[in-house]
Length: 87
Image (tube, rainbow, N blue to C red; front, side, top):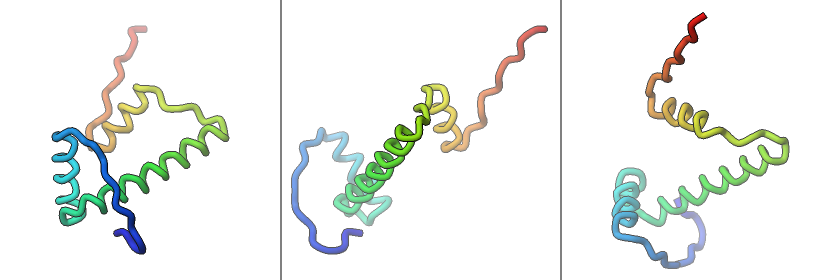
């Protein structure tokens, strides 16, 4: 996952965060936490590029409600039904 030269660094994390990173690394990268962090950093760089694109072209950010709908769709949950107004 990390071709080429690498550089060693350190991070200060609380115990719960470290355990979560290790668990994710076990599931995704055969326990390689460095590979997981490299994946997360690459994903964040793509998000930053998308945010810059949206800002450049005047695309407004998602509302909290819209973000919740997207997250529910990712989880495979059915969308909440809207109530109809009485006529």
